[in-house]
Image (cartoon, rainbow, N blue to C red; front, side, top):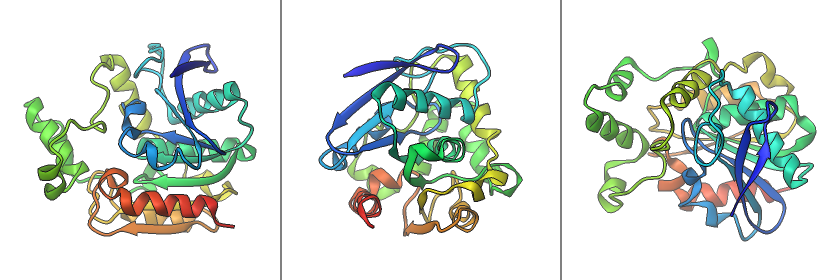
Length: 260
């Protein structure tokens, strides 16, 4: 069931809450809505009240034509927690969602109990970006070719052969053009480097070793920059490690969230 919170500018932000137990906020990747989590959400709902949201510009949320940023997305997410009366939550962000999660932990430390950062980076000049070859493949004029390139960056060939789709990680098909551009700019301009040492929440950094969309070296950088952070690498996984390697990733996240 979808409900709504109001972002800092009054935009309506759609969110979904399922399961029971302590709250776990799930943050999706760039230009995606809550469907990003559909295939793995059930791994957490027995032990957690899972909370997802449709970023502004996606799903059932408003799509105001205003400058988007990972900081703004973070404030939208906090508004969702406020609407639910969740004073404190565990936060699990993947890809751009990991960038958003960084700001929640930095600016609202009292709201974050434990933090999981998946397949993400600190942004700015300290991040290791994808190669020009990867960028060209995603920007191919042939949209089918670009889509195939994105699928290859998300999943291994073996997974694709066994799971031909549809996939919920390729972006909201109904996102308006201005919002798609806004998400791209928000993610590209993210830079939390100077603020990462201020994170006080216990943090797990998770990444696939074969991730070319956000190279895995970023996971080590985040782990070194955030005080006390732990690193968990999944051998052979690409960007959508949480789905293809759910039997490894899901239990590792739950173990971290429930450990002392």
